[in-house]
Amino acid sequence: MVLLKPEPWLSRRAVLLAAGGLLAGCSQRSEVGEVRLRLATGPAGAVYRRIGGSLAEHISEQVPGATVSTVPSGASTDNIRMLRAGEVHLGLTSLDALITSDGSAPEGLSAICRLYDSHLHLVVMAGSAIDAFGDLKGKRVSLGARDSGTEFTSLRVLELGLLDADGRYLSQAASAAALRAGEIDAMFSLTGVPTPAITDLAQRHLIRLIPLEEQADGLFIAFPGPYTPAMIPATAYSGVPATRTVAVPNVLLARSDLPDDLVYAVTDTIFTHTGTIASAWHDETGAEAVPEAVPEAWHINVRTGISTASIPLHPGAAAWFRDRKH
Image (cartoon, rainbow, N blue to C red; front, top):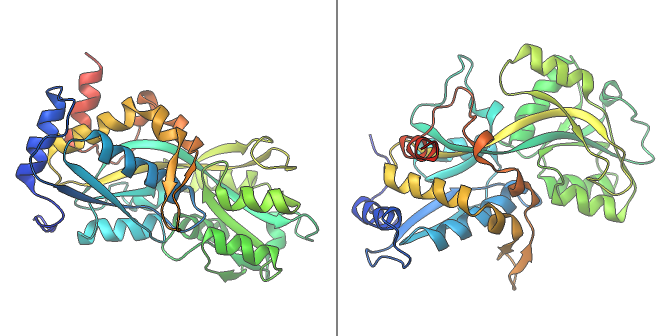
């Protein structure tokens, strides 16, 4: 059953005509009426907010008749909720928060593509007495915003380690501010590398990343599929050496009832305009639009884009990947 309202968000006829015009090679926007889509992103200071904004801009520019607006959110699990409720059409999520206990995707959702991998950061100030994961016991630790991928994964890590911490639920920007002010002792952040909130903190203050090598192995064994041992490179943050951790893929989701031609056009935009998606987006939350690079978008490529684990591709996205093979 289609839950999305046909107006003002979506006119199926307009979508099909608009996307069809693009696939036929039109270079101008088709005069078919406005197609309004909503893309769920993430909280302030998060890569989801940045890459989601860039995707929305470029889809609006490249898909005839389409206008994509972004919807700030708590991130992964909040985005899944909004998609299932019909509040948005597209959304970003980490793969581990998406896969259900039996390995399937939530009903009514499918993947457009895999975008980039997030790395789990455990950040402390340089002078902290916390030197290892076990030192978090009883400490004030931000577990990320409610309904975020950071919350989902950090809680899994703590549960696997049988570790009790004084959990706080703060966005990435709020976590970094609280850590700097001494209001918390550590912060988790599941995000792309580098991530704006931690980059800004490292540029102003000395910080450390706590290794999560054992926790990565534990997640890999306990939950086969979405987790991979990884390294945050020494080039990521000022003065911070390379640190072992765990990586989780991020995917762009769509409601399964979106028209195939529209999703085909969106998929085509993502993979044929990667360079411009990575070059800049405009944060229009303030008085002026400020261009900012989106380095995570450079990880978008056709070879890994199709790798969405047990989450099925939307038929429109699957058709685009099939066409690329011919």
